[in-house]
Amino acid sequence: MASARRSALVRRLPGIGWRADLLERRAGQVADLRGRLAAATQDAAAAQAEVSSLQEELGRVSRERDEMRAAEQAIPGCSFLRHLQELRRGAAPLRALDPDRHHPAMQIPRKLRNYRLAASHGVPVPQVYAVWSRLEEIDLSGLPDEFVLKGEIGSSGKGVFPLRRVDAERFQLVGGEETYTRDSLVDLLTGHPSVWGPYFAEEFLTQRVAGEQIPDDVKIYACYGQVLMVMLRQMPLHADLSTARYRYLDAQGRDLGRDAAPDRTVHSSIPAPEPFADFVRLAEHLSRAVALPFIRVDVYDTTRGPVLGELTRSPGGSQRYRNDLDAAWGLAWDEAQWRLELDVVDGRPLRNLHGLHPIPDYYPASHQSNQPDPKGWEVVTADCAQWCHGGHLPGTVPGA
View 1 (tube, rainbow, N blue to C red):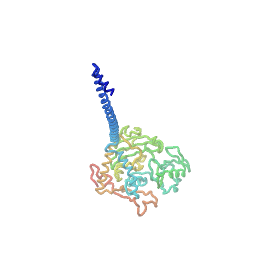
View 2: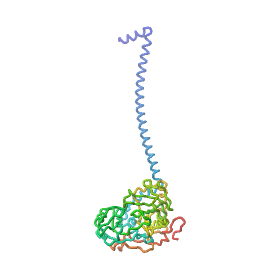
View 3: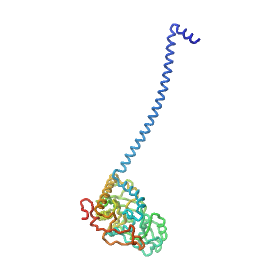
């Protein structure tokens, strides 16, 4: 009551009443503005949170886009590397589906089987001195002073021992310092779970051009009659890839460049095999005989000409090549698959085809290949004029 009387009295005083009314209005405005500011502050916080969320989402989407672009650039639409990765991935289910190894791909890892295939086409192979079914049967006493001891199945140099006799009991590893006895070699072969028999001793090949103790590798990449590339490799130390030197040539013998394989050092001084065209023709021939779109034909340039080392269905290592090469070879693989299938439509057996030359039999009598039911070891023979030199290759007539 006193406060109301005081306010009424103040308003009646000259020069003071209007100020009281203004202060009261200003207090109301301040309260209103503070309320609106609090609401706006809450809205701004919510908006800032939404901005932060959108920025995070934008960053994530941008990173995914950049990763996809990088992946597309790393592996083009047609890619040799991608084909090779798919081949490796599919090996396990194929082994489960084909225990008797009827599929052409399942037959390739067997070295002696590949020697028989190559010899049937007139391709020189190393002389095989002895074959043993089991490790305990191995007898090195009657062999030459230099030879190579191998298991039929094994890759990347595992289970392969180029040897030089030191005395009646000891052998030195060619391209290394290790010395072995017959028993220590058997122990080493036993210790390699990926190496399987039969086990055999073969000729130590003499390289045409003197160089390292281990003959240079001539590894020819081919897609059903088309040579993609010839990789030359020198190995100063046996099975030690850290010391390896490389050179890459096209099917005409031209260098593919020092950047052909980004993760390897190229040495242009490695001599090309001669006559180069003979090595290319050999690989073209065997790649048509094999019922696969891709095969690597490993050859040695020896004093008696090109000699087969082995056939490789899935080369190991990174196998990363310059993008233009990877794309071109990927396309060649695609086309080879179609050419092979068109030949099958025309009557080509989907088998690795042996030629008409005599086929040596390296396997012991107890081996599956010599049984009445060979179960995947059948020898399918065809005249080379029908499929090895024709089919659906450009400019040819099947069977001509």
